[in-house]
Amino acid sequence: MREIVIISGKGGTGKTTVCASFSYLARKATLCDLDVDAPDLHILLDPRPRVTEAFISGNTAVVDAASCVGCGACAALCRFGAASLSGGKGSVDALRCEGCGVCVDLCPAKAIAFPEKHCGDWHISDTRMGLMVHAQLFPGQENSGRLVTLLKRKARELAREHGLDMILCDGSPGVGCPVISSLSGADLAVAVVEPTPSGRHDFQRVAALCDHFRIPVAVLINKADLNEQETARIEKECLERRYALLGRLPFDQAVTAAMVQRKALTELPGELGGMLRRAWDMILALPDARLKGRLLG
Ligand code: SF4
Ligand code: SF4
Image (cartoon, rainbow, N blue to C red; front, side):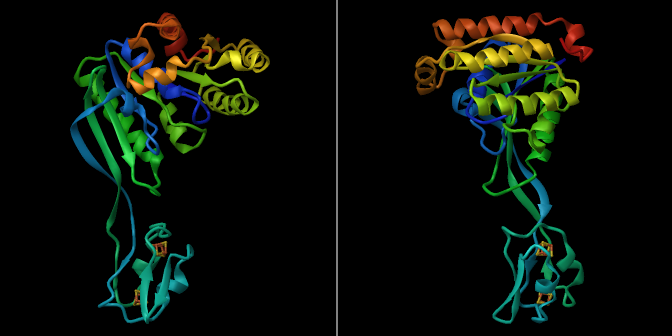
């Protein structure tokens, strides 16, 4: 089974547009949106959830005012400034509570409960392009790396259950914990890169992460015609680092037009769709040895 993760190093490069276009072309794949902080693949794929479950992660301290004796120990002990004494009673700001449990253990009146935290929901859905695993963290919630790991596990289970030979993921942006979780176990990272100094810099950081984990990288330059000089620099880096270059997509209003219709570019006639088809064919043609053996170049 091949796992392909679309990455960008930063948001707004066209990663989801590319992922939706590849999703339409991938015939036997489980789709997976790993951008759990701000998912948007569902906007284009219009999923119909068949399973919805809560994502529970960590705990939050909650003071029972009736049992509290107002000693102030919780406020004194909390290193995160989440507990305080107000009106003679202990109280906890749930948004600042890190769930360390110190106040819970040391409250002399045992007045602090420690319920699990419902941080978001995850789903298995039907889409016109196949089964999709996706999620949404609630605003301000953390542990997105854990949620990404859970989604990938579910996607693998689903692929095995349905005899699908590929998992295609819209990875998390950036280079932090969720991206590392996104890349875990991947056979190929497809980087969608914008030809700007910041786009190239962010690409370099995420590519270094892939190199560290020995994950082959293939590159698609988006809006390549807007900055030929930067495009040439990215191509040169690909050559030097032996990353497969999948193509140069020009800036095109067709992207916005497709989004308005909630369609993938490959579902519609047009030059960009054709270029993405060729890029997808190149991915499929990458030799197995290169993917499975985790060899670069
Ligand atoms: S430590 Fe317990 S008893 Fe003391 S103020 Fe906090 S909640 Fe109340
Ligand atoms: S659980 Fe930890 S972070 Fe939360 S209020 Fe208690 S001491 Fe502070």
